[in-house]
Image (cartoon, rainbow, N blue to C red; front, top):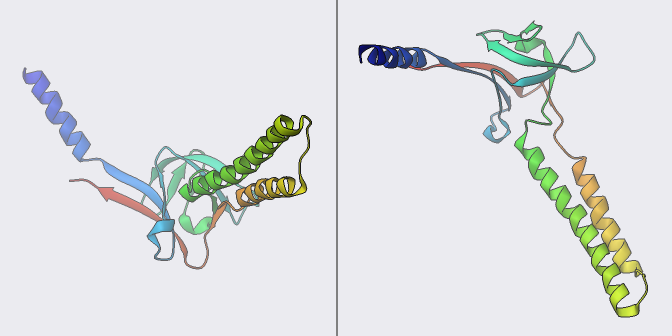
Length: 166
């Protein structure tokens, strides 16, 4: 019984001494554009030294540096961060683009089935074909509007946050 109590107290003290560490990307004072990268997540960044993006895993975050799989980098050295997989606004744009493309495909399918049923042959009217092509094209266009990179300049800031628990 004493051992179980000892391990419970040990677990509680170790848990209380831990800290929450993350990288915060934010544009100005707008909290809606805030993105958070935590320890253990994949981090895709570009520095002024290299003209390509580097993909690494965040191992640790200190007060003034990010410790990655192969590199140690300061936030001031980062030029851009790839946020395609991280930004939740991209999921909304994806769903909206799928809605347009799906609507165009459904209209095309329904009008072709309707022409087969009513007229006995496969034919599409110009208005139906144009509208469905417009919906599919709009869906493909919206798909290209995704947020791709977070550029570290101007009001955009990269902060290293370490919160200690009591």
